[in-house]
Length: 196
Image (cartoon, rainbow, N blue to C red):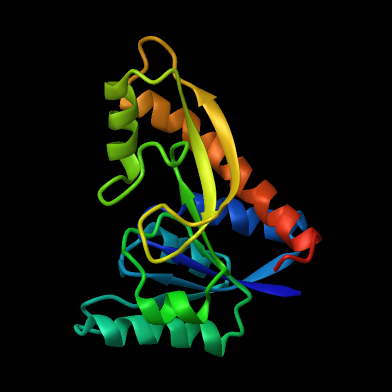
């Protein structure tokens, strides 16, 4: 069975969606470790509740960025991780991890890339930008992570209509529901097709 490593920073709702889909057998893989840069993250608590190894690695455990990068890569390598999923991870990964897991790090972004991507475009910032631009649709993009923000090869996208009167918060809520489903469906397909 393929092994998944998770990177999470805060609530970990995407992480929970993956946990649930692995538990039911929809995703033909096993989550073996979750790493968070936030020692108090709900994501780490979710991991512990699911009996998944939970590891805190951040600038407080490794003040030198290269040491932190190497530590993240080492955890994933030592657990023989086949694919890494950034499930709401709010830090840019370093070159060591990106190189060692090139073509194996999956990222989720809450817009239709290349629109509303790039540095600083995460979470509510994305939804505010969509509303401000007057876009008639937004959505979710799943892509392979590379060294730039939100530029790696696309894997899947799902469109979500923007309604008149939508706020960033109402749009975020609708997109999150679709995000969970698209992420699970993508991992289901990747594990079935033997791409991971």
